[in-house]
Structure formats: structure tokens, C-alpha cells
Amino acid sequence: MGAFIRELQLKARDHGRLPMQWDGSPNAGFTTAHSKPWMTINKDYREWNVASQLDDPESVLAYWKQMLALRKQYTDLFVYGSYSPLPELETGEMVLGYERECHETGQKASVLLNFSDAEQKVPAKKYQDFSVLVSNQEGSDIVAGQVTLKPFGAVVLQSG
Image (cartoon, rainbow, N blue to C red; front, side, top):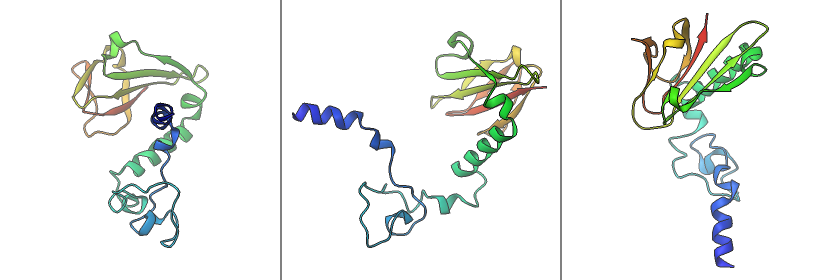
């Protein structure tokens, strides 16, 4: 039974479902200070919470707002457009890449995501007529026939 419980805990989805850290108050603003949440609040809630990121244009919250606005602005492309994964031979082992295309409008986008803590370079000959639509790194651009992704960098390229 002990082995079963251990395996169950390892595979539980609750590890990624912690209470929302709204602010630096007791229980991270998730519930009143006199209540006890059924799951543990992260120990870093005083530094990492929604309130601390509201006015920071470089925050994770600001990035997600930007991505959601992008999805809303380009719904035909990012929601209804076709999806094609880029082969690892094209992106390298540590970069996940895919393309989206809206056949009705002719819009195309390529998304490159660096899943490593090291800089990655992706050949960009096919992206010569693309520009950076959004990125989580400064200075994202296609230079000398390649896209350079900083550690854990992400870039969305759009044609036209």
C-alpha cells in the first residue's frame, strides 16, 4: 500500500494546482487570515504574487496579458489556423518549434521555444520575410540567417 500511495502522490495533478497567490497578505490573499487553505501556499508568496506584478511591464503577468491579447487580435491565425510542428532537425534538440497558418488570410506565424538554460540558434533562412511579433527576450531578431534564443527564450515570428 505504501508503494501505491507514493506513486499516486508522484502522479497527482494537485502539485500544479496550488492556491492563487494574489498578494503578500496571510494565505497570499487566497483566503482570509483566519482560514486554513486545504493546500499549502508557496513559501515565496510575499515576493511572487499578482499584486507585485501588476505594474511591472517585464513580469510574467504582463507577458501572459500580452500573449492573450495576441491570441485575441490574431484569432484566425492562432486559434483556427493550421498547426504544423517543426522537425527537430530544423530547430535543434532543445527548441520546440511550430508553425500556424490561416489559409483564408495567408497569415503565417512561427513559434520557437527554447526549453534549455543555454542559448540556442535556429537557422532562419525560411524566415527572411518574417518579423518578430512578440518575444520574452530583448533584441529578438533574425540576424545573419538565424534566430538566437536566450535561455528559456520564446519568440513568435510573423510573415509579412
